[in-house]
Image 1 (cartoon, rainbow, N blue to C red):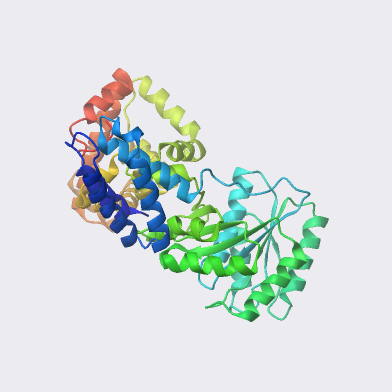
Image 2: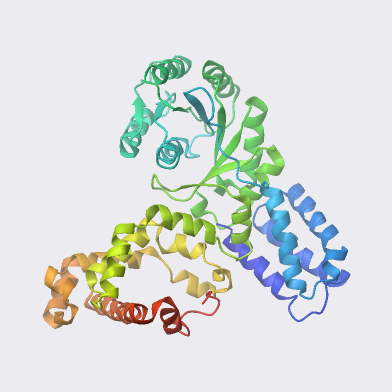
Length: 452
């Protein structure tokens, strides 16, 4: 997400390097490029005009004229205004009410409401330790109820059964009654969508809303619809008292215009981003962290939080003890490292949060993909226990067998073993002299722009 905008802004700010001060002329030229970058990202025109004007007002002020680095000064101003545009802080869900707290999911058909309902149920259970009941009022879309039932089972949430011959309002009211009887913390109601906004749809969802009186009414919208996402959100906001937005499919949106337009147009905060298809691919929306990503400065805080949640501390401690005792890093350890990386969203998700990645050439960034990691895991899983413990025994005939067993080529097996050998050397340096020696060993082999 935001890749195109990050690239364009990065090039624009680079042009200020070597200039002594920000002047009216270079501010004018730079802001013209910023304006074009935002329009190309499909940010709504009124939002672009207001944003650029605010940056201009601050850029010609005293605070910048005293700065020694025009590029850094402009980055700070643009960062502050991006945060202000998207909301100054992460808006939390309102859950401190008499249980059950009801969350109503609204949006057009195909926006990802049902999947987002399951993702939110999982997030509430894992992060907030809440008991959750989900219910579907979508009696129109074939298999919508069955889809939510399947997803509820996957994420471990309670499911309220309903059928296509029932009234949506009656379903919602009965689900609320069951949530009360079971003393559950949260009820999430998935409503029906349409291919376009119509009176019948709005009337039905207003009646469902009145029946359950939700503490949160979340509008679920596909980020790839760009400006239309903000306009649709405004139409829903006119009919319902929306409390926030869930922006879905952001992993497939390189522009990010919806995220930058929605709050300004609707006055409602983005509360969550859908960042993939899996049920754990939902993250709270932090405007300051997103602004940092847009400007190519990474998002280390989110990376640390992800690691805290998903890295197996037992395995990490076991590996540390093993290396400390001078034992060799083997392919079982390498397999565990790859698995944990995949658990954190894969290379694409990790690299997006690293500072300096925006400065990498497009060609280098395109080489980073999770297909290679899946291939490497398949190769290691095709090895015998002995081969994993003693990789030196893997010669010609064994390599051919492993390639055949993993559905790969011999050269893929050779490549993995070469990468493993490099990793083994790195781990050896780490065990002897700590992280500093490992970083020194990596330096020079990393692409320019990485933070080492």
